[in-house]
Image (tube, rainbow, N blue to C red; front, side, top):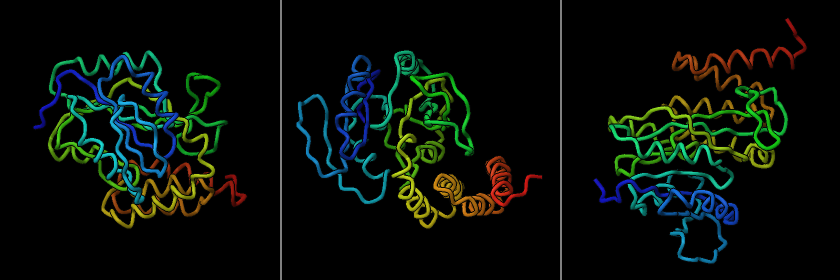
Length: 265
């Protein structure tokens, strides 16, 4: 086990050239975090004030490697990971603090990353949510972002990096929380979506035995309008794993295919 500062929280953020957005996140969490680690994968150097630990890491189409490098710099007992295009409100900051103060055998907390959309899209997972700023439609993704600083816990996969696998291999307990992170990335997905689609396909090539690889090809293909390819990815995942995980998006896409083909019954 690492020697860590008990009860302390490290903030871990990765960005490319969006350091001004990162500073806003750091400021919002200044009351509860004792460490700020920023991993920068772009070419632009930033003015370092000593407030943050800055790590420059070359980008190679892999989200896990830079995050794991930043993780190795953390000295606090807990790590709270956020993205540059996210924010957290005061109520959820209190929930983060409360979670780390609880005693017990919990090693990590699952929370909701609420990705807002400018308008309702006919897309799997979109729902109406409590209004935040001017947005009422979003997709809630469950992910682990608050976890103990433990060498057995690390990020895996080049795309849609995750901690679940390492936690489960080490038999470490994680639980669902009521913490919500507000995510703005989907508002600007139009220009980024083709890249995410390509990197999702690369994940499937690298990790064909991971159940979620087919899922991410399916969701990213649908986002850029490749409905048939999205359907085939979900269908392949369902046939391979026979898992309920794929049933709902398959039903959604079957309906979408009928509409596109002019068949409404």
